[in-house]
Length: 335
Ligand SMILES: [Fe+2]
Picture 1: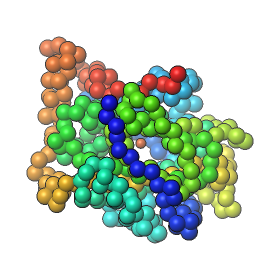
Picture 2: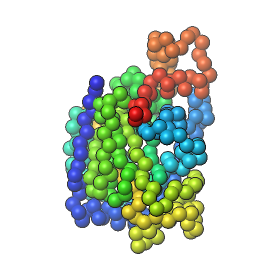
Picture 3: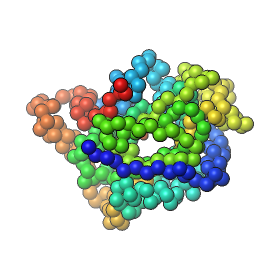
Picture 4: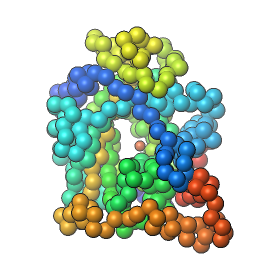
């Protein structure tokens, strides 16, 4: 069984720098709801971008096998997200030390054994009480295959198939926590989907760094103590009102208000891990890109070799569901 390398940070930052991350979050002030737009490509048309994770969550009822109406499940998993840095672009002043955190860079080298680490994005996730994040692996990237050109579930299936490792761009993710909520543990499967889960408390000013494209992970439910989860709807925003108070709603009107201590605030850092400058150049100059036709043909060939597909080729959606089913093997729900 493969054991995935990960590193823990406790503390991640100095107390003053950790406070600065909280102030930065307040200063940014408004967070939109992270939604899953439908896939537009002819293969798997109409499927959610993360059809793999969504279907697993609905079918399994999450890590604890809870079954709830679809609208409730949607409200639980539509959390709030904004980017703080994208490549070299700084979207809020003060994020620079986090973007170039030397501990993250060193740990990133250890995860993939690749020395050239290039930070790609820093973003915040905020979950309100009652929200959780379904178990999933993140969307990987391959030369020529990114979110703009390929549906996300296809890139996930490509990675789990192991057939495109030569084109993969290894990525690491650091996840750090800066709030004080109860619940909301970060759960991951370092020994693979069949291994035991590890649940980490989302403790303020700590972090984990790992290959989230390969390691299944999710977030357990944030404790609903005083305020039960309201019927959150797409397009609502989370806005900081000052004095440790946050508001959720479409505009100035509040559907619900929370105290800072009830929210789960995490900041994620993703970086590309290159072997050397030559590899980085090959990526930038697109000298060895995959195309979607090549990818689908290779997967179809493999599905036939595995006995999952006969001579006839099913329609796009059926073929897409077959690929997800064959390659993306989720951890079972807890007993
Ligand atoms: Fe993730």
